[in-house]
Length: 153
Image (cartoon, rainbow, N blue to C red; front, top):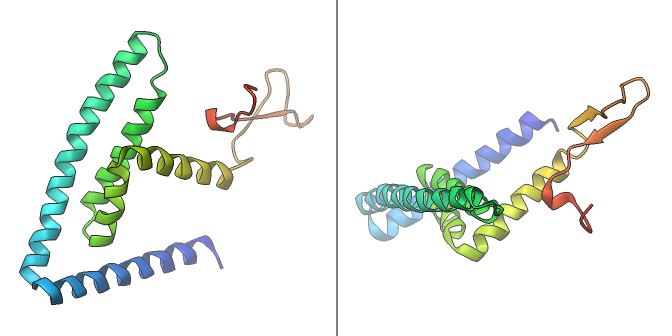
């Protein structure tokens, strides 16, 4: 099965799941209450993400200006950005997942899992010739990400 087919079926399953959850919540609390709840989740989530993002970005810039590594604040900012995007997508499932990205300890772990997934997915995809190497001699350097290093190498 091709990548487009996988994406298509994943989006289709997601849409059916979101519709199912919305219908179930609508049956329990009423359609207009569910719609208002969904809209308020989006607005409140956006405001929370915007507020946390600003504070986290300012802390990261202060750390960078003082010579410290801003990586912790940048990971937090990445998690809050993902949370904000998920809150803006209408649906109860995405709102539920977005809440996990706002919890501090889960934030770091979930961002780590996302980075690790993409690192494994694209392993070997980013190659560039070494300083004096070339494509004929097949001397290449793989892009090394901070979480890819072991024992400081």
